[in-house]
Amino acid sequence: YAKRMLFKKFKGSLEQMPYMHYSSYQLNIKKKLKENFNIIIFLPNFDDAQNYYGGMVFSDFYEWITKTLEFLKTKNNISVAIKEHPNQTYISSTLVELLKKKYKEFIWLNKFTNNKLIFKNKPKLGISVCGTVLHELAYHKLIALSSGNSPYKNYKFVFTPKSEGDYFKKINLAINEKLNLNRNFKEEIAEFYYMWYLNNNDDIENYSRILDLKKYKSKVNENNILILSHFNKGILNNNLDKYIRNNKIL
Image (tube, rainbow, N blue to C red; front, top):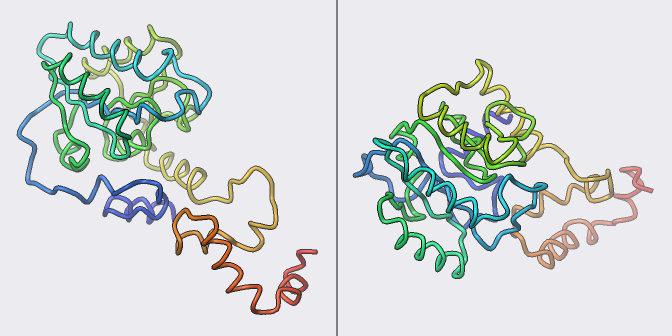
């Protein structure tokens, strides 16, 4: 099931990610990018929660990107591309414009660039703080590096640094093609995808799971009031007491 849903994702589906403004696998299709590069960096939305998954090896997103780019500036014969985040806010995009001016030597890709084109370029390394693109890189047989804690921490298809020094060490290893994926990396990705996106992974088993409220969510996106209204029309108008008894909710 997870493999089927991954296949749909890479065809442009946002079924598991309705919070995204659009799919990075559907827009702006071209035969190839003008530039070739060895490393691709996927920027976060700089307004996002910086330590949502328990912290990274840098203080914040800004320190991460500036230290990473300063480090990569010292690498001869290594071309680096940087892609803006599809969901970035106005404030985040303003910061990105400042970074573009400061680091003109790098290739800057706009947020509408199709990830399929990036993957076809076959970079030696893809870097993201903790984004969903990490498992997408690995699925396409590319080396993926996070900057610390992430949903992938206990999986081997994404390389997770233990410290700032280890982070830069792993970049060097990737440049020299000394990082490799395990043989069963796609099985691991499927397991991760199922557990993170498809399984009933709420904190406790509650009535919302029994009533299967998720099926209403896809019809009305993220608006909680509309979800409640849609649920009421489907259940409350069809004898809720009988529904509860039949499903042994009480």
